[in-house]
Amino acid sequence: MDNDIEDFFNSLSKDSLELVDQFYDPNAQFIDPVVSFTDRNQIKNYYAKLYTDVESIRFEFKSHVQSNQEHAVVWTMVLKAKLDPKKPIVVDGVSLIRFGGPENKAVYHRDYFDMGEFVYERIPVLSLVIRKIKQALSGGHAKS
Image 1 (tube, rainbow, N blue to C red):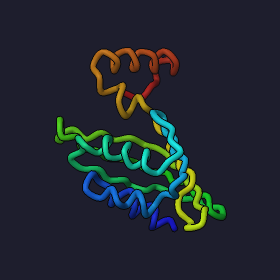
Image 2: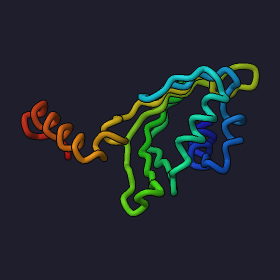
Image 3: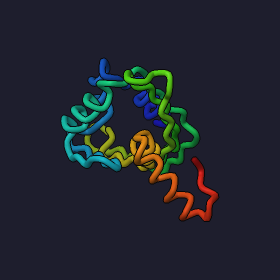
């Protein structure tokens, strides 16, 4: 099953959204720091919008823990946007995915990642504010 998860995420693009139907149960619950859905069509629409401006995306899988039908997958996403393909966005995260239902597809998928890494730190004014907050909270030892 771990290869199925890795294959799905590294094969998914705006041109392969039919993979969503193969991976997710029709009533799958999907949660990330931005959205929450309980329907495969909503998940597919979300991926369609998310991947519209993507030049390329790949996931480097670091580890995978499985207990019965539940999987915890640690990954690094490397995304190149069409607006600035020379400067990739690199974000670390974890996905919790549970399989079940009549077709043993993903019925629950929750992503955990730092929205600051993904979006906020890419906006110049917010980037400065976030960096100052991190420095203050870490006693001046924050990552940039």
